[in-house]
Image 1 (cartoon, rainbow, N blue to C red):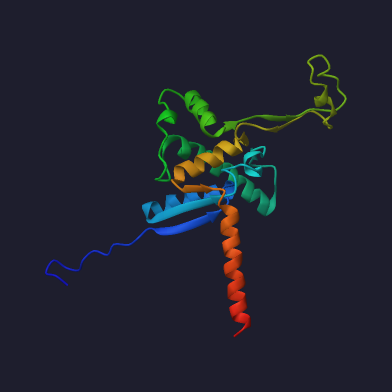
Image 2 (image 1 turned 180 degrees about the vertical axis):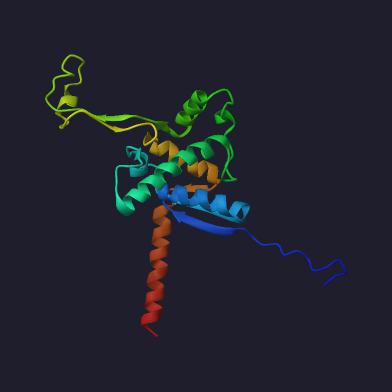
Length: 209
């Protein structure tokens, strides 16, 4: 110990490897960086590319009040979280890494421009939703006859306060970008094989004890 006190302890960033670049892997990387800052070094292993399968092809529909009980609470939480993310991922708030949002910075001259920018970045938009009755013939002349086969009476199913949509591929890609994670494509199979080999070796060692 010197007269100036103990020397500062220099620690290496905690290294985290995430298997899979879908929405779960992307969100994990984003919140690891958001909570851990530069103390976390994240690598994503993906067989093909970010959001290349179901995470990039889902409908992205969000409704806060279509469910009940515990599921209803999760739906409401998810709806609010996606709205918060639309602002964080647009403005640069939140995670520290991958900050490349200069082209998507929100303007200060009205909500309309902000909404357009949010839709460009992650496809987030608020919507209204209605159910169209079956057999009414109201769409026979506008080329949308399929709408007459939905069933039930025409009714309101949600407003912009309860219904929204997000582009799942854009959201997943943006989460990874903002996390600053290193993406290693076509490495997932090799990593999985190495894990299986290591697990098999540990099992053989345990069996021979």
